Structure formats: structure tokens, C-alpha cells
Image (cartoon, rainbow, N blue to C red; front, side, top):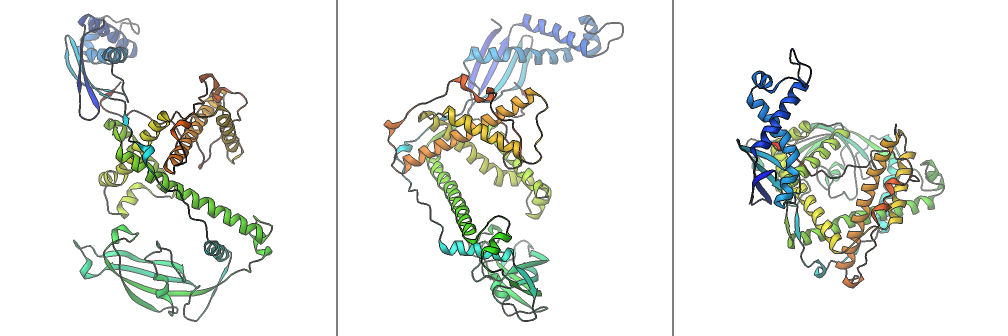
Amino acid sequence: MFALKIETQPMENHQVKLIAELDQDLMESYKRRAARKISQETRIPGFRPGKAPYDVIRRLYGEESIEKQAISMLVDDTYPKMLEESGIKPGAPGSLDDILSTNPPKLAFTIPLEPTVELCDYHAIRKTYQPEPVSEEEVQKALDNLQLAYGTAEPVSRPAQIGDLVYIKLSGQLTEEAQEDNEKEVIKERPYQLIIEEEDEETAWPFKGFSKELIGLSADEGKTVIYQYPDNSPFEKLRGKEVEFLVTVQSVKEIKKPALDDEFAKSTGEYQSLEEMLSSLRSNMEANRLREYDTKYFSELVDEIVSQSTIKYPPVLLEQQTEELLESFIKDLQERHTELETYLKANKIDRETFIEKEIRPIAKKQLEHSLVLDKIGEQEKIDIDRETLVKETTQTLQRFTNMPGFQSPKSSSERQRMVEVVFRNTAERLMNQQILDRLKAIATGQFKSDEIESSAPSPEENPAADQTVAEPSQTADEKPVPAKKRSASRKKEI
């Protein structure tokens, strides 16, 4: 037995404190090993690497340095045995928090436990699934926008009217009644261009209906517009505030739209006829509408299950999810040629507050959704069909291969690793989709619990080892992502 005593102490945050007292003879043997390692890694005059006597190493580097190295090696070798003997099943790497003594060695660890999920009776939850169809008015609006995109803008000397493209300078500041803590400026004077719409979008800037304020203004004319933002404004920081806008028209242009005919459809380079364009436009709009509806539907459905379930997980998992989400956000900013510090300054928020108020809540929701979906998949006995998984993996890899800029793997091992990453992510995507499909069937009353079937592929049916799978590539939109990490840097990780 390598340990004289192992003690565990449950903690409130789904972690456990493990205190292990080890045999002193074991510590002495590791001190000898540590000294040899030090002598191998450093040059000691008069001795070949690894051959300097223990007393020489101790005299040169000190007992403390040897003990520190010995503890590190000892922990690496014995930590798995500590977990096995204590019966702890970690959910993430533990950390060595304290060396209570070195004679005998007594070590204190904090170990995150595996997440636990006690699901509610989600089979009793009902939620109607009824996406709204795309209307003819919406198709016509999209067609109008397409015409505008291919239209030509010609300067006019008359006042602006609906449909015109107007170039303006715009500034805005809070009215005296709305000012707080010397806050005043909302928009520094800057140029804008906008089309005067019959009906603006809800998220139109600076507010819905603003473009109509420009009707009747000619070049070099201006006006002041005062607007009270409602409490449900899409611009959160302006909710309930009154803003005074100063607008000056620089120029007015009339947009000449191309005629809606087959020639216009051909000029886009994608269609052969107006009928084909309309069909494709409607199909794309319907697909986007359904995708947006599904995102909202499943988010609300899983939110309901999460709120009624009991979910426990260690803090390290939330920290890790927060870090990954922040990294993703920073990458998105960089793709738009913006740095995080610039974004924070523009939004008048510091990094710590931004993470705590903006990033962490989303990370928490993502983590809890993921844990709940995994548990539902397990409880519903949902498995992925091997044939479907192989087909989807192969198709994904083939799309990568055909993308511009694809660089072929330099070795068979590199190729295999890429295939395995694509395989894992394809499996995860298919599994999540099947779980969501099952939840929708349950929530709409179309599924009965006695319909559950299992069709798990056997371990040897892993298509990552299938030599018929196409060679992978990566694109910005479809690049495979690594599996979720379950570790975080805390003192010394195990």
C-alpha cells in the first residue's frame, strides 16, 4: 500500500478535498529520483549527466528544491492511485492545494467531481411547434432589396422622398432631463447613408421611423429630432432615455431599380430566369426562418427543462466554458478587424465586468444545456446510426477537400487526426440533432416512451479508421473544433 492514510472531505461547490498521507520511505525514494533528474538536466562540474551523488545535489541546490521536484514526480505517479483508493470519480483535473508536511509527506488536493443531472419529468412538458410561413409580402420585400442592391443611384436637386438614398451627418446627445453622471454624448458627428423606407425594421438605427424624418429635406438642410426611447428598445443602453439628434443632409440620390425580368435574374450570375430566382429566394427565406424558429424553440424548451431539473457541477467547468466563449468572441471581433479593448472602450465597460455580466451568463446557459442534453440522450437511449455517421463524416470531409485553400495533410498520422476530429464533431452534431428531434416529438405529444429503441454502433465501427473516408480540409465556416476541454489552470493540476 503506497498511502498510510487517505481522507476525503466533501465541499459545497461539487468538489471534494482529498488529504493523503504517504509513506516516508516512498518520499525518500522519490527524493533520490528527483536528485538524479536535476543532475541530468543541469551541468555539474566533475560529473557526467545524472551521475552526481545525492549529497552533492543537495549541497548545490538545497533540500527544498529536491523536495519540490520529488513531490511533483510523486504526485504524477500516485495521484491516479489516490483516486482509485478513495473511490472519487473526477469531472476535471484536480489541483494540489497544499503540502501539509514533507516528513511524512501529507498532501491536500481539491478535486472537481463529475457533473450530476437529476432530470425533471420532461415528458410532461408540452410546447407547440408551429413555425410561421414566409409571406408573399416578405418575399416581395426581399426582392425589392435585391433590386436596390443592383440599382444605380443618381443625384437629384429636389427634396428627399421615400425610396431615396440620403447621405447625412448625424450626431446625438441626451437631453438635459436624461443626463446622468455628466453623461451626454450618444453619437459623435459622423457620416451615414440610408434609404428612406416606407416601413423601417424594428432595429433600424438610430430608431424605427428615423428615415422618414428626412422627407422634405434637400442637400445642405438640417433639422433637430428629439426621440424618447421606449423601455423595450432594442438598444438596451438607451432604454427610457430621451435623445436629441442633429441631422444635416449632404446629398440626395434617386435609386433607379432594374426591371424584374429574366435579364435581371441572369445579371446576378446565379439564375437563368426570374422564376428560378423567386423560387430560390423563397426557399432560402424559408430555410432561414425555420432555422431561426428552431433556435428559439429549442432554447426555450431546454430552458424549461433546466429550470425544473437539478444540475450540479464544479466551478472549473464554468470557468472553462467562460474562457472558451471569450476566446470565440475575441476571434469574432478580430475577423471584423476589431480588438477586444477597442470594443470594451466603445461600450464603456471594463474587461472583468464584461466577462461577469455578458460572457459568464451565456457560458452558464451553454454548459447547463449541454449537461441536460447529454443526460436526456442517455436516458432516451439515443444512439447514432453507423451508416449515417459514416456518410455524414465522408461528405463533410469531401466539402473540406473541395474548398479553396485546402492544404493536404503532410503525413498519414496528421490525416488520421484530422479525420478523427471531423468524426467526433459530426457524431456530436448528429447526436445533438437526434436529441432535439426527440424532445420536439415529446413536447408536441407525438412520441410515446415505449417507442425508445437502441441502435448503438459497436466500438469497432469507428469510421475514423475507415480508409475509404475522404481526406479532410478546413474552412472558416466548417472547420472542426476540438472536443470540450475539462481542465483549467489552478495551482498544480493533476
